[in-house]
Length: 390
Image (cartoon, rainbow, N blue to C red; front, side, top):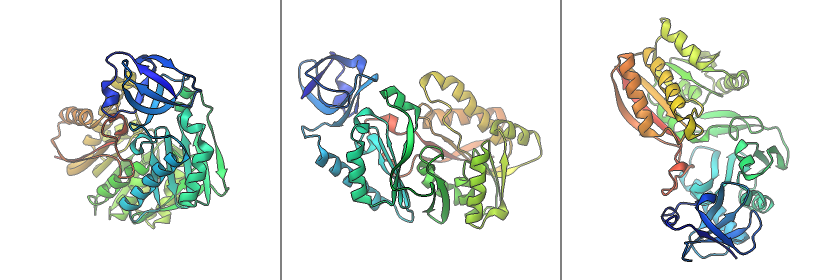
């Protein structure tokens, strides 16, 4: 077993449970190891800290799999995958779609597995997982018995590991448009071309929470994608739902989802740049009782944070201007760089500029099938605030 020795003073984060070791933290590597192979991580004095994947191709050189001296073999991965699936079966009801494996949250760094009815979608985003893809596929097929498995290894993050971007069927082959059941709703999910792996599973609980607030209300759903929040709002009894997105493909599927759930008559879908549409609505007489903001990640890196905060403030300011007194603002950030505290500060500043009073009713995160690793704040990326507006 090759050994990775850390530089002096770099062991505290790893010893506290974090799973990532960066190239700049490494003093030396002793022993032969191929990229994607297993190494032991030690302090500069040789104290054993953990075991994981190694690569020379990325600035993130080691992804730890365990802090215990256990063998990393097929039986190890089978145990981890069995534990992940057993957890989802305990925690989730009334759905046949979920995140089966959430990378570091399941102590399987670089591996994402989503289930959509009888189809699995697989992402191996780290070299150590990618070189074991066939083994992982075999275990997952044995555990979950899917009809088909689709590979969505198209995220740009794979290039940081020296991996090609690709997608396609790994096992079985069928129509990539899959119908799922999620609480009271049914949705069509395109596993081949949809955002992420086809659907925003992480917002499940937040969609349900929003739906409980909007009975008999006029709702604006900005950045609606394929209609997740919009359809749940309509099923929750909303009087009208206006859903806005810039993607014609997403809106086409959103309309189909509204029809599938029998709420198309109360949903209106608008193709527009959301920033422009919010400005237009704020300048018009249009007013709503609830506004839902679920934008894409404006801050993918720390360098983009300042500009991102301006974007978040802009959309929240415009949303506050179109809300009636007593209305609801449900606002989200899916960037770990703009967490709950920063998002609250943004909304507070927007409220001052909009001359509105707001009070925070509830803070939320991602759904239970996205468990957070307590030593890795990076695994908690989704924040959702529910505010009353006066």
